[in-house]
Image 1 (spheres, rainbow, N blue to C red):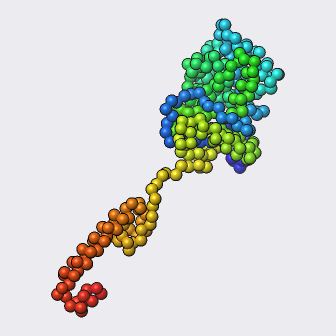
Image 2 (tube, helix red, strand yellow):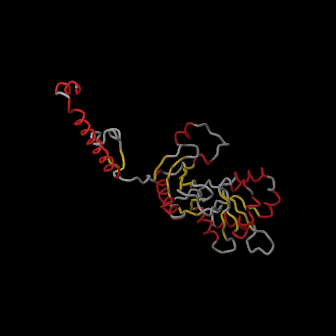
Image 3 (cartoon, helix red, strand yellow):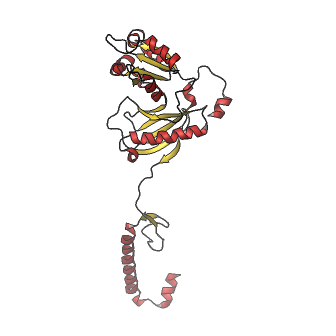
Length: 289
């Protein structure tokens, strides 16, 4: 990734996601209850909470809502709590200014993370559409009516997101290109341990773990080995005619095949003794040669 970034010419239209390290989690079975809400996996070195992060709030401006106005949320985020919030969009603005699909798609691509008032989360799938949920940009719920909402936001920014949908494979962002290798390693280990506790049946349901960039091959770091019975290698002289030389078979089959070979050997000896009753020694030697 570093070599590619150094050799590639600067491109203002390049996707920032190309600089991400992704942990790929593969399960044995599909989750029984898929959901669009991600699980939070705390990381020792946040991937989203950095100087270049771009976070958008979605506020609740419905009548009788106790949520702060959009302007107050933006001022408090920048001046008081120093959160990487670049924009606060009220729910009414989403319904009016972002009705076309293309405008929703551009909005989803313009921010790294969306955090919404928890009270309006059930309304957002219809308002935002598949432009957000198919690209894993679904907003994360925070209670803006509480005094400690900035700490809730910091918890979201300091966590990786695990989506458990209708498939067996999930991608978890665990690092950036500008992070140290030790930091990425610590994030990977923390994400693995936390993700294994979030999936159904925990480690018993984890099939494989891979690391990859957005457009690279997936490099395995963990793989479940298929459970096999005890195998042994049978010499060719023991089971000649039944299995090939060096062929590996189940241990339970050795005794059965051995008995078959012994019975066949006895039958051949009996036939030789019967057929050779009237054969001279010279004829036997000539036949053997």
